[in-house]
Every structure is written in C-alpha cells, then in structure tokens.
Length: 611
Image (cartoon, rainbow, N blue to C red):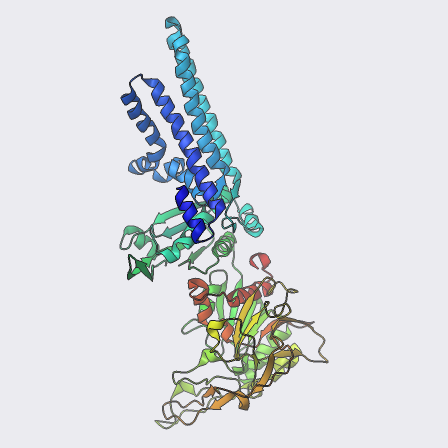
C-alpha cells in the first residue's frame, strides 16, 4: 500500500487527507477486530479453536447487515455493520459516530476479556452468582456504549479531511436542515448504480458522501434511503416510477468502448411535496440541488413563477429546459398577455422576447411592470436560439412576426397577415417605463477570449470573465456576486437614461476591447427562399469591428418607484445547451449562465436562501 502511495505521488497530487483517513479507518477497524480475536483466544487453550472462534466473532459486525437482509431487517441492521461505519473514513471524513462505534466495540470486547481473566479467581460456590453479576455488567457496558454511539450519530460531528472539503456542508445547508419540522419528516431516496464509468466515479462518491452528511445532520427529521439499481431490475422499475431513468454514457474498459446505463438520481419526498432530480451529472452542484430540493418539499406551498407567452415559446409546446429547472423549485404557469396580468397570481414574471408582443399585449405587459411586479426580462437583437431549419435567424426584434400557420404564401395563400409588433419591435413603451436605452438591432462584440479551444468563434460570442476585469461581473449585487464567467452571443447593450429616476446597477458587462455594431454591419440578409417564407438573416463571417474601449452593460438590476426588474440583453444565455452542459460537464471550463438565471429568479422572488 505504501508503494501505491509513492506511485500516486509520482504521477500526480493525491489527496493526503483522504489517504490519512483511509489508513486511520483501517487501523481503528483492525484494532476493534483484534480485540475480538483476543476475546476468542481467552475462551479456549486450543489455538485452532481460538482461531475459528475469532473468525466467527469478527464476522458478526462484518455480516450483520446481510444477516438482517435475510430476516427482513436489512435497513435497520445495516448501520451497525463494520463496512457502513468504515465508509466515511474511506471518503476522507472522520465521523464521531464511527469513532465511538469502533471504540465502543473494542471496549466491550476488552471488558469481556477482563471478565474471562478474572473468572479463575471466582470460588466454586460463588461462580454462578458472580457470573450472573458480570453478565449483567457486560450487558450494561454494551448498552452504555450503544447509547453513546447513537448519541454521537445525532450530534453529526465529523471532520472533513479532504483537500477540497468535498463533504463539508455550507452554512446555508446546515441552517435549512436544522429548521426541518419533526412532524413533517423528509425522505431522500437515492437510486444509484453500484458501478459507474470512470468519468462518474467522483460524482457517485460525492453524492453518497453528501447524502450521508444530510442523513447525519437531518437527524430524525430526514431519512436517506440508498437503492442500488441494476438495469432491468425491480429497483429500476421503482426508479422509473419516480421519473428517474438511466443515462446512457460512453465508457472505456480494457481498451474497449461501450455504452453503459447509469442511474444517479434521487427523489425528495415530504407530506407536502415531491422533487425529482433525474440525474446528477458531472457538472451539477450536488449540495445545491439537494438543499434546494429539501427546502422546497419542506414548505407547505411553493412560490409561483409566471412565464409570459411570447413568440419565444418557452412554455406550452416544447418546453425549454429553463422551465424544467424552475419546476424543481417553483410552480410554473403560463401567463397570457392578451388580457390584464394580475400581479397576485405569481411571485415573479419571466418575459423572453417581449419585443415580439403586439400592441395590446405590450400594453398589458407594461401595465404589469408599472405596478411594481417583479419581472425578469430577456430580449435580444439577434437571438441565435431561434435559428430556423434553414440556418438563419427569423425572430429578431427587427424582423416581422411569423405568419400565422407558418405557411408559404406562394402555396395556398389566403392567410391573414400577422399582427405587427408593438413599436415596430423596439419595445419603446417598456424601455421608457424602465428608464433605460436598448437599441433593438445593435449587438456588442469583445476581443477577449480566454479559451484557445474557442479561438475560431467570432467576437460576437462574448466571454464575460473576472479574469479579464474584476468590474465585468458585479460583486455589488447578490445575483452575480461569486460568479466567475458567463458567455453571451450576439447580445445587445443597455444603459440608463439621463432623466430616469431609477437605481441602475450593472450586473455584467463587456471588457475594454469591445464595441458595437449595427444591423447592416454584422448581418447578411438572406435572399428569397421558396421553402422559407420568413425573412431570415445570417451573421457576416468577417464584419468590420471598431473597438470603442467602452464597457457595455449587458444585464442590469433596475429599481424605481414603479419598477422591480432585471433586464438581460441576450436570450441565448438561457438556451438549452447551458443547462445540458451544467449537468454533463463535457467542456473543459464552467460557465455560470444557469447559476446567474436561478439567482436572478430567486432574488426577484425574495427567496435568497439558495443564492
């Protein structure tokens, strides 16, 4: 084993805390079993018999969990097994309950050794009486040791010795767990494959480790059930009943690549609610997901997020993944702009591409914003997320609304022309109310690109990083405080109007090597396409860019007497790609787009626990 440590040190940088706790765990477990062997050796003078007795006694803590499964008490007896108590040590954690378990087992065995050694001094006439007395003492010692071990488990005291503190719960998580209602206990059922590809070993290990932390910290108010799931088994059917399905991933073993079905999901249940996390991908923040889910099911009622119905089509047809993500925490409802919008029906309204609204729809939306209703707005001068099947963008604010039915007027015309966008797509009334400037057909570019693997991307793919400038991402607002990098594509820019009586706080902006381009400078208008009735536009391959050395604000928090809004001049920031990448982590870098979006919604909903 020492040789392996030396090899690891030569090849890389091993986690010394993990190595130390693992060795310590083996040592203390070995010491406990050694005391059992000592007790066996004192029961007989025959070495062979003593050896067999030692194996039998040592097998009790090793196989007690499997024995319990045979008699139907597996879940109750498994925590008393040696493997279960050693598991934390093998993950880099030293738990008080594990220490007390092994120390208590050793104490009981050594006390029985003492009893057997003193037996030779008992008189024949008093043997039965003293034997009964010592038997009761031994039972009492065992009961005391068991009580102390149970108490240690309730205290949830443990030391995370891993270098990166992988299994240390944040203060927010601890606060959420301490506030759980004992009359409304919560159960976490984790469905996990017993073996996973190498790429998911760390994820599985961290998930199991954090679940053990939740189980310890939650006490009687939270119970964790681990279910090892094999493909096409009863456990797999149970998992699919909750909406947890295996993810097929590529795995390499012995030089051969193959597809493997992996279960790494969980369902969090209370008497109020249920939250399902279908899959914990490599990039998913596990503690955040668990804490948010526990907090959600602990509440009697969820808060509500409204999604404004626009040409973006976030909800109602093929739901965007932002909607599925929000449904883990909020009730999500579609909000029609064709009639008055009641602020009391939801806690936050999300409006994506409000520039596509018609005149009466815009009036209803502006009236809602005027009432001070919290609103998160995404609009985009050139939304790549709405590229059509022919490759061009056909839903930009400058472009006309799509024709009803999407048909080609050359073939069976007669369809009524589409309604016009309010203010010609400029969203003038909305901008006046917000007190900001936003040009509906102008995009930003930035020459800063910290990733060599993306050097082929045009400068309109803007990487907003603190590495480039500490001011690019604001630390003044909790929405962006702590974020490191975001990416936006063909985004617009916003600024405060000189006469506006608002509090305008930039959330993130471009760097110093940036500038602006108008529609004609970056767009190549598509020609006529008989199969595509909608006018489409493609970005020019090499537009003429002029750096103005100004920082252009892309997103801002806007507060006023009648305004409570966050405006983001980009829609691609919420595209499905970033939610998929957040889970699967296929890239070599991490973007904080999803974190920014969730923080923005939580901030506007005044639900700051998970920010």
